[in-house]
Length: 131
Image (cartoon, rainbow, N blue to C red):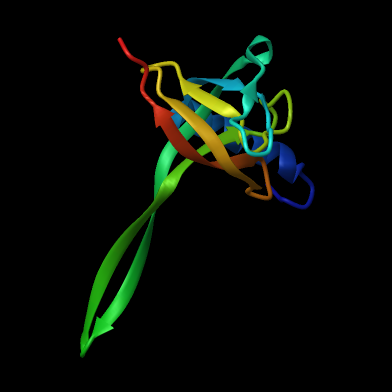
């Protein structure tokens, strides 16, 4: 199959759906109204349940110590990614993400596109619900 004659973006959308099927979990996404100097105000009536991937990315680096090469693994903050086709609106800083498996709440710290078919968000933990 030639990529020249096929729809490349449609193929990447199928890849994104495969990522959701393999690594995804159900999360509740709630848009929030950001207010300067105050906590974001959530719009609970507009919350949707979608499939997303929450993971902690790691970066492998190498450093030289004399003539020896040592591997160093660094972890970055938590990241949530969503298929662009699944999102009903654009995600913004301050929006809330709730994992439905355990009730863990997160807040979106920054949003970036992967350039193809997914939206990646750096997230911060807001806390676990009390039982």
